[in-house]
Image (cartoon, rainbow, N blue to C red):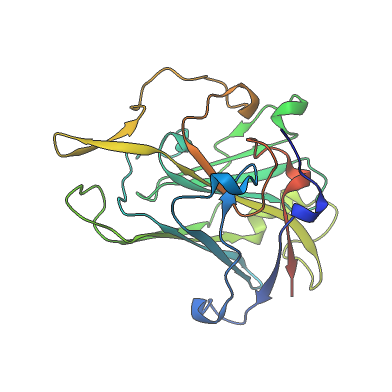
Length: 248
């Protein structure tokens, strides 16, 4: 049942920088919750994010607690949520249309796409709309793809050039002005796994027939979906419900 209302929207004041971010001075978001907002479905592992900006880039740091860091997808612009991943959704003009999506797994493999409108409104994704000059880095606190290791987790660090986001904000400038507010949300897709012959195997294994559509309303969801700002339902593509980021 969907009980979302405006009070569920989360807010973040994004600091402007003069140099590359000193992440130690930048505040965290709230911890992620289940996508539905149901407290009974509290995430098993902590996830949180920091954001910052300057004249050239929009900076993101996502921290994922994870005792077993693994990834399998190495080809850019494959469907990334078949692995554990972190996803960023950006709608600069807050109209629920023409928005950008970035996904990355613990191997640092990325998928970039955009939606002219949400899937539920008949939107067809534009795949592989990669932004020139985008920078990303993965930091693993442990040993990647090593089932013998008890890991602490992984970080995703991303810097997106404003020049690549400008086309999603046609009425006003990118970079934004101080006081501007954008709709943004984050999703962490987390699969359960087992260890078979010394290798991580996803549950269900990669290649298991699931709903093929990218439309979230037509998918099965054996994975967990944890988000910054709860959506009220298992559907990230309700951009009018995303969190609000104010540029300071």
